[in-house]
Length: 216
Image 1 (cartoon, one colour):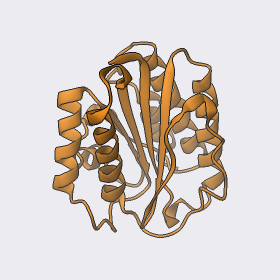
Image 2 (image 1 turned 45 degrees about the vertical axis):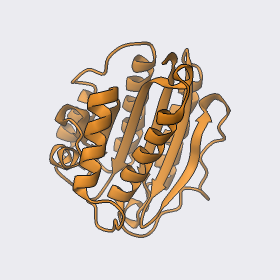
Image 3 (image 1 turned 90 degrees about the vertical axis):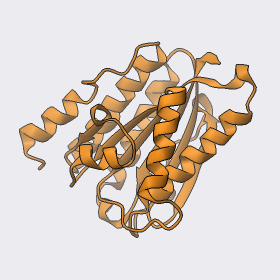
Image 4 (image 1 turned 60 degrees about the vertical axis):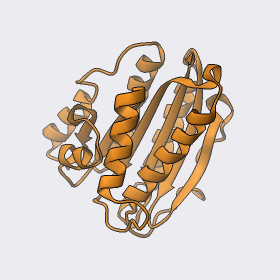
C-alpha cells in the first residue's frame, strides 16, 4: 500500500430538504478541500451528490487539482436514496482497490456521509446489502466511515449501515451547523493523513454545538 496516499469519498445529501443550505454546503466543502490541498501527502477525492439519484462530481481526482463545487452542481430537490448512494460508492471504490497494483492502493480510505433525513427512495441496495459491504471493508481493510446526520438518531442510523457508533454524530441542520461539520471533518481528515488514528471523540465539537443550541 501507498501509506502517503489517502482515498477520500464524500457522500453529500442534496435532497429537497436541504433547500436553503446550498451556499453553506458549497462554501464549507470548498473551504475544507482548499485546506486539504496544503496538507502533506497525496489524496484522491470522490464526491457523490444524492437525492433520488446519485451524481458523481469527482471520481478519484487528485485533490490538488479539483475545481471548486458550484451551485450548478449542487442543486437540491427530490427524495433521499441514501442506501443507493452509499452502496454504489463503496462498491466502486472496492473494485478499484481490488484490481489496483499494491503500490497504488491507498494506505487510508475515509468515507464521509452527510444527510438531513432518513432513507426513503433507494431501489438498488437494501440496508442489509450496505451493512455487509461497509462492515467488510471496515474489518478487512480498515476503511473509516464518518456519518453526520440531522433530524434523526444518527447513531442508530449509522449502526443500520454498519458504521461504528463512535463514528456517528447528530448535527444542527442550519448554517452554523453545516459550516462546523466541514471544519471538524476537515480537521479529522488532516490528522488522519498525518498518520493519527481517528479518535472516538472526533465529533465532540459537533455534539457540543447540537447540545448547546438544542438543534436550533
